[in-house]
Length: 75
Image (cartoon, rainbow, N blue to C red):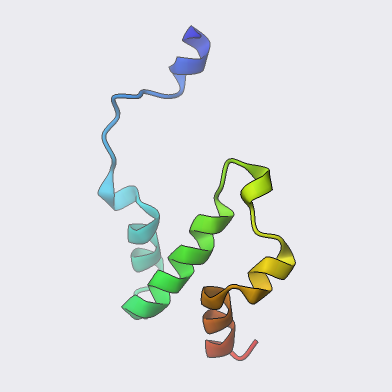
């Protein structure tokens, strides 16, 4: 139990500047709010601890947010 808690402190407070949303804003400032929301939606689905909940390639291709981003960039 102790070794498991060494890397994770349950009392840690969220760091807003380190959030995925903040990172997207910082790394892609030219993207508008709607595009950032679509990207965040896609990435959030992909960053899942449960492999059975991860989207398959087929599901991703059918995802509305993914399609919006692909259409925007002509893919």
